View 1 (cartoon, rainbow, N blue to C red):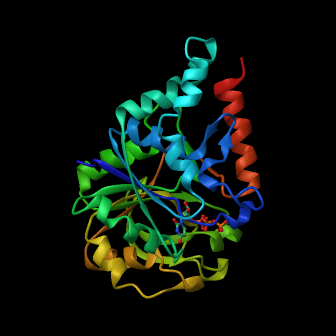
View 2 (cartoon, rainbow, N blue to C red; view 1 turned 90 degrees about the horizontal axis):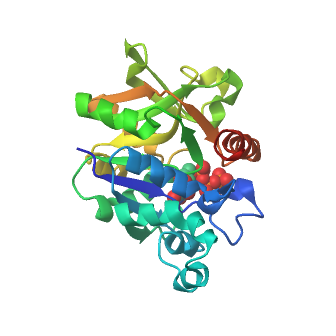
View 3 (spheres, rainbow, N blue to C red; view 1 turned 180 degrees about the vertical axis):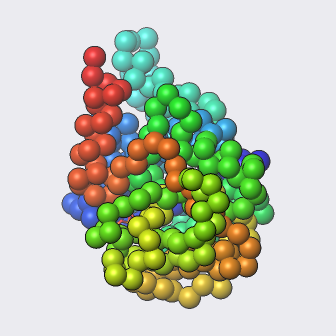
Length: 275
Ligand code: UTP
């Protein structure tokens, strides 16, 4: 059973400067809710209640968001504005939060390894909050993946088809199709040029990882961009055992880029807010 979800949230968010100069990228709002809250809601819907967050300098706002703000609460108590806090209050009642800091930002693999003390020796989910995944009225993406994990018991990465000219933004897999939406991974390449990409199946920000991944990350040398890449550790895991890639159902918005962020904002406004 997957009980814990890790949110690596220590990155600098340079593609969103200057907004991210003093504010975490994960706190950027999509309409009126920060990105990370969407991610935590997705985890809760998947039955995961222990939320572990890897933060860094300038990320205090994340901890404050999932805590009580006494001054604000007493100010609006008994007024009709209290309704705006219903969602976040429910989250705080249903989830527990733990935090650790990544002191040097040495990449996603390193961020996940920094979360090891919060996870321990059990399988866990990973959500990159700047990838907003929505599948209204049906199972969320993490819930789909948890169900798959219960069946296959190995690491799973979420994938989607991307245009060939965009492979250099992603980890790209190749593998053997074992169901129309599941591949057994043979190869994984981090940010390949289109001509070097083994396919157009790109890894997005949802993972289920078995705990042996931590030792594999520890053995991983810095790769592309001098960062410790999770794809390199996953590649080793695929060679030693099994890693699955799952073509999820739903929509994914890359909110680490302005285009994806605007698209997500318009989608959420149209679908969840507009009366
Ligand atoms: P990104 O590359 O999308 O985030 O990493 P970034 O580095 O913050 O953004 P840019 O490229 O500078 O604009 C994917 C996820 O991994 C986390 C980020 O916070 C994001 O959620 N991350 C990345 C870490 O926690 N630590 C790192 O060292 C790198």
